[in-house]
Length: 99
Length: 104
Length: 57
Image (cartoon, rainbow over all chains, first blue to last red; front, side, top):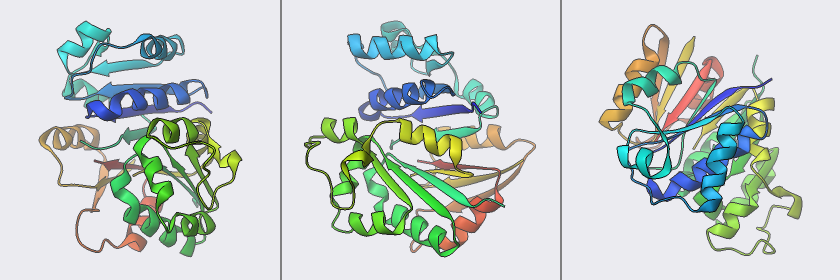
C-alpha cells in the first residue's frame, strides 16, 4: 500500500542526498515529499534537476521555505505553518540528517 | 501487536542510539531492520558494526552513499555481504513491510 | 492518533512550531534522546505504543 512520506532537511550538506532518498521512495510507489528548510542550495546540476523532475512525475514534490531555492531551483515555496499542516497528513515523517 | 521495527539512519552521530534501540528491540522479540544512508554509511566502519549486523535481523547500507562519502564499494564492511550494499529500495522495504519506523 | 516525539537535541524554535501544529488535537508523548544514558528499553515500549514516531533532529 502506498504511504505518504515527508523528508525534512535543514542542512545544505544533506539536501541533495535527501532528495535522492525522496526519489527512492517515489520509485517504490509511495507519495514522497521533501522540504529543504532554512538552508540555501547552489543551483542544481543536470542530475539533480532530473531527480526533481522525476519526483514530480511521480506525484511527489520538493518544497523549501527559502526563497532563493525556489527562484534558483524551482522548488515549491512553503512556510513552516503550511509544512506543519502538511505533516499532519503524512504516514511517515523523516527529519533527515542533522542541522 | 506490532512485531517489527525499521530504522533509517542518516546521521553518523547516532551510533550509540542505533545500538541501544536495536538491542532493546531484540530483547523484546521484535524483528529489526536497519538501513544506513548518506553520511550514516560512515557507521559501517565502526569496529562494532559487525556486532550490530549479528544482532539485527537485516542490515544494509546505500552503496551509492558509501561511494559518495569516499569508500570503495568493493570494500564490503565486516558483517555485510555484497548484496547488502544496496539501494534506497531497502528504505522502501522498511516503509512498506515494518510495523514501526524510526529515523536516527 | 497517538504521536511520539523523540528529540535528538533540544528542539530549535522551528521544530517546536512544527511539533505544536502536528500535535494539535492529538494525544502525544515525548522522549529526550539527548539526556545522559537514555532508557532505550522505555523508548522501544513507547514506539510500540504510538501510532507514529517522529524522531526530530
